[in-house]
Picture 1 (cartoon, helix red, strand yellow):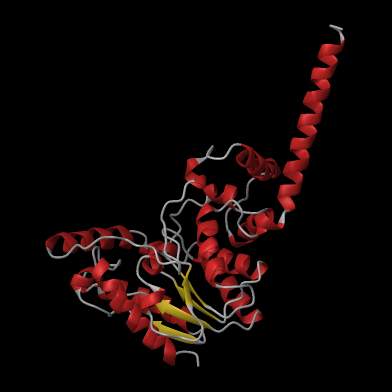
Picture 2 (tube, rainbow, N blue to C red):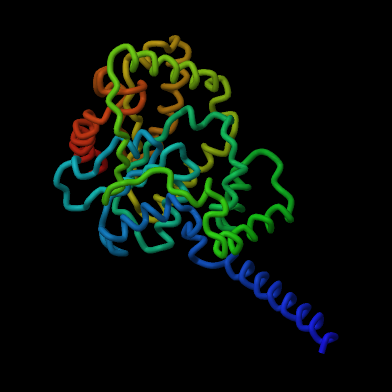
Length: 320
């Protein structure tokens, strides 16, 4: 009897490892992962979208950075036949916007029009993208590798990322950085940033933000990752016959007044180069007053509805 116990233990261990490996292999190719199953920010907004829009139903998709996520309330954009949904993601840029669009298309949520906001500081090569692995499918990691200019991880590191999925499925909460929702949103994707800062404090915040962003201006466009992702987003929209409107977000005079003429020229040229690739283009950089921003680039709480209404009116005349 004693001699059989180690044999049973080894058999159980072998069966367990086999099942674990099979689960890892299946999850590697599961459609849910292609659609962002382990991206908690994506899942959260997707759950809101599915409550309001059915697959195949017409809607207009807003993509972009925190300036869209915190700055545009679809319910304040006016009455339209095809409703808006805000899929802006804080601290994310063109790579994530491209992945969001492709995931939604895979799930059958094809927008009737796409509005994409992008911001030049997120095109500088200072962002660490190595931690994206656990929220990307295998196909998405391969796509990211094509966009990058630097050497890629080894094959083992790729499989290591695949093993993250069953581990996190069996042990939810093991990686709080990926498994914890950072910000909530309303039923149309708007993320409330409950700040109302004006006067000297807002002016100083704008100055600090500008100084921080301009440090990366000399490297603008040197890393092809973000430009290739935006180009892929545009190509995907055109392939699907989705009209696309580009948006340059607003900023305060306190923020933009610190640009030198050369810096302003470089940034303006960056946007002009991209604007020509969209069916419609809205330049909102001069919208509002200093009092509308709490840090020069993000809108105060009391200004969101006014900007949303303005944007809604502009969109009525763009790409029609």
